[in-house]
Image (tube, rainbow, N blue to C red):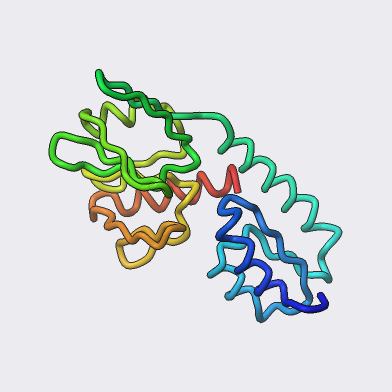
Length: 177
């Protein structure tokens, strides 16, 4: 690409289009690690383009469809707020409230985590601890008993949940990504 590398272009695009699904097509396999750090959706080697590109595009489409449209509504006497599922990184217990962490900040609702979880009715949300729910769409890594999210948050997984969390993330990624 004249004037910029794919890595440079991805770094410039990401702040303006945080949900964009970038697929790298390259013969330089050594850039795969850097692509992962930029939250690149898929890395397709040029020597396997015909086989891998169609499935990468279909997988990106499936993920976009999964993320589209659904919202969680917070309604109280003084406010009403709709939060798209795709914007939710995690939901954490904050005293008697559930704190919904999004890319736009934190919204609180006076409900238990279990109540919020039941209202969501969505397979992409998972308890990783009795005080924390994560959105599997934003999970980048599970390592050393922690979940790393796309926004850089590191959340602890309770030891009793660790194996089940790994299995559920693996199953979810296998089915949707």
